[in-house]
Length: 219
Image 1 (cartoon, rainbow, N blue to C red):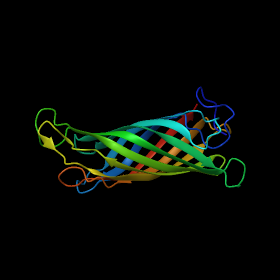
Image 2 (spheres, rainbow, N blue to C red):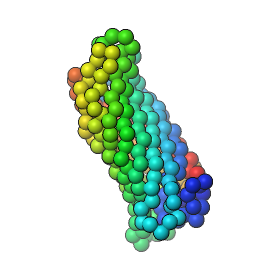
Image 3 (cartoon, helix red, strand yellow):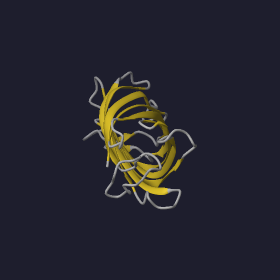
Image 4 (cartoon, rainbow, N blue to C red):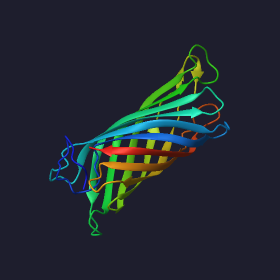
């Protein structure tokens, strides 16, 4: 079902592929209390290992970067992560090519507030922490995937150049729709919705109602 990969078996038929690269454009979002709309861009990379093994869970390595720009403000937010975990797939007896995939990772997480108000020098504040991600990859149809997902993240202390943005922790969650354009599932278009409750900075800001559209290539 998944496309061939230099790492994964070309005979894999037990769920969607985990070796892919994806780019995204973020046309819309908003920030609590600040009154700013948000636009941005980003991407994700995933590598699946030993997917032809007899084990029910296969290892995966995933990472991503997203840049959020606040309209009418020089401030921007960079989010990045890299995580290691596992994935599996349950065929519940539906039509061929359908079933329920599941995955989880433990992540290194980084948050950077660029050109933040206050402080001095470069006016940037950064924090490094950890996250735990989980999600489902429901193949509702052979060419249609629905991917609800959530991450608990603790960024530690967000500080730098005289800035103190607290120690935000909380959940990021959303859902992504993947529409495959070919039977081998190499090419796909994506659309997603995300929000968070991280409460960053003095006014406990969070990113809400973030919409993204993109494209994915599965190797």
